[in-house]
Image (tube, rainbow, N blue to C red; front, side):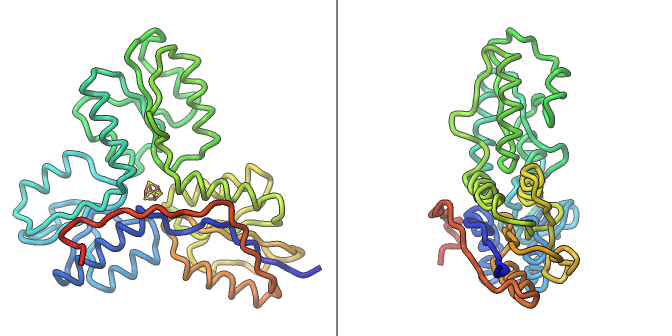
Length: 311
Ligand code: SF4
């Protein structure tokens, strides 16, 4: 039996990540270094290190941004408090690299708040996207991470104005279960008009489901702080496939490959294709020479750059 590599498709960069990286790159070209970026522009070590060598400076606190600098918000979005602080500073330019699909959830939240809804958000506590989304209004948003958290919600079951939104990069299956439970508890629950979990998260999880049946193990290329990469690893494990999350090919242990014939490979939405190529080259050294692409859907999404950077 020939040893094979099964490539999940689609994998890697999504339209929001492409746009965020291009904003930093074009800002560097147009205005020169340093370009200050609040938080890692996307959660990928390779991408962030690369931009850093070109002159991007990643900061968490706006205190560290000197006057007259150029600032970029990361793809995860920022709370209003950060936007207000940035406006008070004497900055030359601010570019918002928040993914438009995250901004869509921000607008949903603001609309719900204006209409006096009690808002529940499904997401991971402390993740920058969740911090940014919950910080879009002055009022309270109730965070739910697991089904158990629903019991603790101080909202009455017959509340007529209760709505739920979600982080964009969650597990599709787990989120469905949480929403089902919320619907059981709240008869008037308002669901998002369109899904909040983004197309890229959905497609990458579907692609892993499609190859899981034919893989002995799955290698997920992505950084440890990447939410959607972690969900891909968890998904494979839930389907009974041992899975490893790695930043670089040299983290693969030869022992993972012993006695295996079929290695699945995917990449989170912030991991570039060059890292997939390095993993494939590494596996070929261990006689995994037959490479199969396993496409499930074609992606055509593209997001426009801010007008100042369209050149
Ligand atoms: S994973 Fe989804 S929400 Fe996040 S940047 Fe990509 S398209 Fe946007």
